[in-house]
Amino acid sequence: MSQSHQHRLPVWALRTNGGVVLLFLYAPIILLVIFSFSASRIPGQWGGFTTEWYATLFDDSRLQRTISVSVRVALVSTLIATVLGTMAALALERFTFRGRRVFDALLYLPIIIPDVTMAVMMLMFFSQSFNVVDTVFGLGISKGFGTIVVSHVAFNIAFVSVVVRARIAGMNATLEQAASDLYASRWQAFRYVTLPLIAPGVFGGALLALTLSLDDVVVTQFVAGPGSTTLPVYVFSLIRKGVTPTINSVSVIMLVASLILVAGSVALQRANASRGRQQLQTSGGTYSGYDVIVPSDYMVTIMIEEGTIQKLNKAAIPNFGNLDPNLDTSYDPTGEYVAPYQGGTTGLGVNLSVVGDDAAAGWGLVFDPAIASKYAGQITLLNDPRETLGAALKYLGYSLNTTDDGELAEAKDLVAAAVENIAAFESDQYDELLTTGESVIAHGYSGNVVVSIDEYEGDDEYAYFVPSQGGTIWTDNMAVPFDAPHPCTAHTFINFILDADNGAQLSEWNYYASPNARSNEVMDPEVREVLAVMYPDDLSGLEYITDTGDFETNFSDAFSEAKG
Image (cartoon, rainbow, N blue to C red; front, side, top):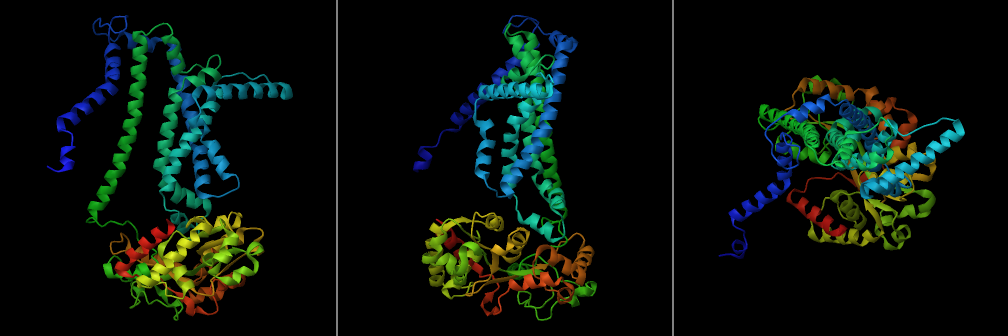
């Protein structure tokens, strides 16, 4: 008998343990429900079945008032806390600013401090605030509905923020960037892309805030005033006189209300999952739901081989002729599957006021210890195996598409040695970190860096360039999935993007290079001049990232080892 079988518990023991745990958790609830129907006034003594206590509750005007106050407080405080908590979560996950860590720590205080401490803090706050208002404006303000709402918002913001941040952290930030590439304003990108994706987290945070508000006793007791008693506080006051069947009945009603909320949440999740399964089934298990996708060059080759994109009908895309005939589209050998969308390079954004003449070192800013050590803790590299190891390979004089184990090992060692000077491996906010002063050297994509520099008032302090040792050149392309629901609409959209004026506006918006020769002719000259900086005079050192087949695993493993 193997050792694993010798130490395995018998099934009956596991079932018994599970039964005991469930009994421990749910026996009190079952007893509560049973004795809420007992005719006896003595706690724990069965006196026959009756619904008298429930009827008494519905005739109790004071109870009805407390329920009304609780519901109104919960709804108002939940709405405010959800909005503010979501805003805080977005700020902490999507932006970098001075004092971010302090703000993050302060936001969590309501979660970790005891309820009674929170209650005393709010009481002192209102006491001092009311005194100031009375002294300055002569307005007499007292505790009541408003003070309860403010207090509940104060501790619920933290809980909402935690739930929403967890959702945002699992979201692909490039989806928002894609919306911006298609002319969406920040508000439109948030409304149509970000909000739908984080909606489950927002709903979960709101549900948690609602439950906490309906259930709070300690804080509410300290900040409530005459006529603003909530249901939990009312129930607590009744307990002081002893546990009665009335309290049992009130508790059961609160339990049922909680179960309804949970059941509604579960039903909503199942409905969403069911819709997803139906979509998958109606498409034979290959449903993508997209009419147009935008894969990068190396992915185009893979998708053609796998048959996941269809050939384009160029007769339906008359603007295809606007594309630069000299454009390198070797990743689409027959030129039948994709329409180039935009392109750029991967290089370095630097703070010239700090780096100065060292910028001439190119990748040496990162990989030469004598230079990089000057900027220790102020350098960011992309969190991408092919890009970062590719930069190291170019610095060493190798191809970034190498399949040589020895060359890759050298690049891995180079990245590993640079780690001590690296502030972060960052693929989402590297441009903001640069222009906010938290870094002085940022490895990143041309358009992102240039846009951030352009938006910064002191843009003369910053520059983007491709190091002299070479780097990555890339082209994003428009393609139609093989199972696109509306292929005709997809071709119409591609033709729209390839229009000369539209292509020019797109580059003027996001500062990525256009493969559209006609667009370059009508583009704003200043933008055209900026875009020219993204490409070095000598293009021979630039390479497209290509699929290396099974060797891709070697890149991923080497990158993980290098980062430690």
